[in-house]
Length: 441
Image (cartoon, rainbow, N blue to C red; front, top):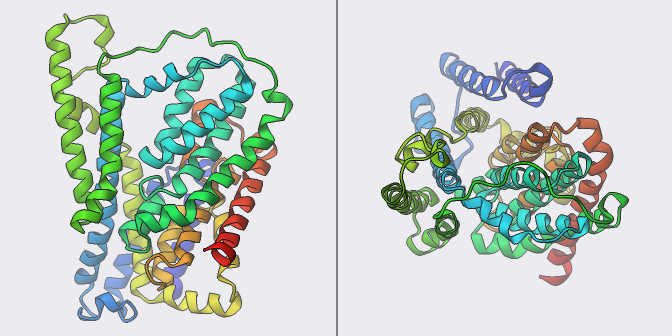
């Protein structure tokens, strides 16, 4: 029966990987796989919870008990993500991200590359790599008229955004998972992964800046100017500050991160309501605000969050939880340690594999497979590898997929032009991490 479960999981995994070829949204195989796996566990009365020490107090036949346990752990991640996504959408409601457009004055292609790289690196650490990519590619479309240059810029933004998300507990779904699962701390993650992530971004950007495509200057796009909002900059500052506040809230109160995120959402939503009413009361209805179909920024933003992504995370995390409850991940981890004793090689391979397979289930499996202590260097290396390895292929990360859709980036074009740069950056950062761990720290 466990063989059947494994086959179903592999088939579901393949379906997720081939999402674009099959033209089926990856959330469908994810939630289907989750439901079927747990149904088999229940109907076949399979022995569960024997491995995980947190679950020893549960009866082996209590499938509902272990299901609720894993759902609680998964819900912490999902509620955290919903809160962060809503804050970002409230900022976008007031066109707050267009504030970054005012900072860009250069006409040099190379300088523009570095400006967007630095913005992507630090912005992704705050609002996550997916959202940072959407924001910056949107701004690129308003600034750069040359389609070829824009493709290169979008590809490089993907590298910088993924590198920036790897060293922050709120910069990537995988680092958030490790943080909430108490595998890493905020200070430990930043201290150990920060410099390798910087190197992972700087190396490909330095090489790219001397390529012919980034020589000379560029022409401004002839598209319409950005729509601005009087409260755009204030809500941007409040929104970003509120998200940065969440790790400090956890450190001070020792409460789960989603509690702090809900508090931050409440603060930003309150400011949004105040700003919206002030704006509506001081101005007459005009065509400038036809995009704001609802007087409530919070309600508007809640309708725009990525619910398909939330359901995908629910499906894949609960599917992996089924394998963990059966002890299959634990057994696989022991066999893997015997086959490949060097953990650096294991994590490095996982990082490269994340360019092909979604990094969320990879990290979810890793959390269930290995029992290293909190802030062990193994977890820091996994955070780096899973976060940055996906840049090697355009479909290897959420940031890459969204850039692919927004700019119609061809898979093989990215592989030829950007993939090798991302791979060099990944290796450089990996080497920096090992040197720091073995000879510096």
